[in-house]
Length: 95
Picture 1 (cartoon, rainbow, N blue to C red):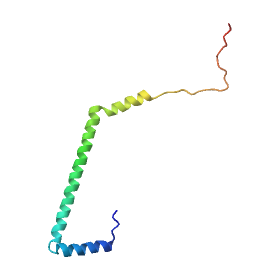
Picture 2 (picture 1 turned 45 degrees about the horizontal axis):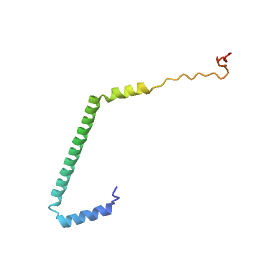
Picture 3 (picture 1 turned 30 degrees about the vertical axis):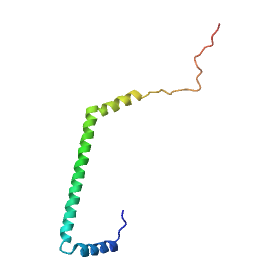
Picture 4 (picture 1 turned 90 degrees about the vertical axis):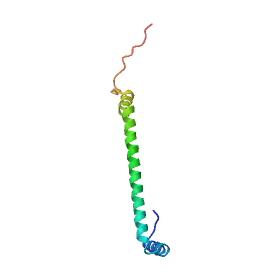
């Protein structure tokens, strides 16, 4: 995604050690890890709420029954047993 190699990561870590300091780097890493974990938990909870709500709407509207009714209403049975050798039973008017 970001196309970052090992060398780039080592440079960023060296800059972080210089800027933040070696004593505060583990604290920062823990804080970032906790923040990321909380973000994932919140996102998963939100996703589950949305999925539960859509299931509730589907059940209250009766979308499954509606789909079956539409399918039954649009189904067309056609008998296509045509024999081209048979002559039609149409008789001309004799007036």
